[in-house]
Length: 443
Image (tube, rainbow, N blue to C red; front, side, top):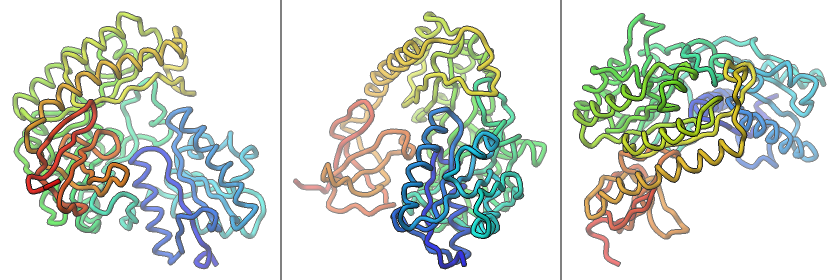
């Protein structure tokens, strides 16, 4: 029966959640289910949710309510899956009546059983926790065909005091190397493979009782269908000399590393249960640059953590000026239920948090602009992602631009093939993007 239904799928949240959605799409495709991007035509809509922050939970609920309006037309069933039901199923049951099926983070393969039960019985079907954490290979990419994410582990055991992830995703679980290699080999021709996990740098410690990230990088690099590899979510204390050496010497690994610090000041870092210190972070950046002069380092920071003083916030601005990172993301602290930080005293007013985040962006904007200005007049290799029709040019990314989170390179060329790389002469820069052309382009 379900094979005759038309499915629509919505993925919310991070790139790790995107991989889960792509594997869910793979399950639907293997069952020969039909898919549509037009939700008004869908008979079943699956919403794969995020619950990391209050804003993400609000977005998930609003998406369910918006989709419920389609029940006046073709829509028959709404499936809510992923992090939101995994953590908050007790709050959802009996309240979010618009949903017909609930699936947790390990229950995707139960979707058919749950839907069939839903068609037999009118009440919502709660299948959270009824599945198994089975590894699946088949995926339907939702990224551009030349870019793919590879989730190498799930869960986390860092237990940062502000973070819900361990309570949602559980303890850290590395996926076996042979399975990751098989999945990556079956992705097709990939210009850029992006490795993700809650903590990429702890890969293998749970499964093999030793860190195996370097080994995984080496084996992925031998796959003929993978052109380049990018690493995200590398915790600073786990960026080892061996990893730095691999990053420096392996031509397939882009000279880019994302190291989420979350703060720069020792007292706040300790309250966050982060392992590093300000001086150690700056020393790590110096080591990376000494070994790889062209390295692009990205990070994320939280401002407005409970008891953060004005002096500590200003010290973080000074840290940014010292660290000279290519790009950063800044977030106002969000008080999340069932976290240690939520129980702390000294919570900061929202207006103060937002002011500090704006100021941090202002500081980083000047730093990023100065770095990008250094590329003007130089040639940069750019991966073409497609055409920007509004600007009337091609758009792509250099090695220091991760998909979706960093800037872009806009360029003119006689032709631009998605997934191909071009040498672009940079003519100008702003705080986020570069602009240029190929040498053979004539206006």
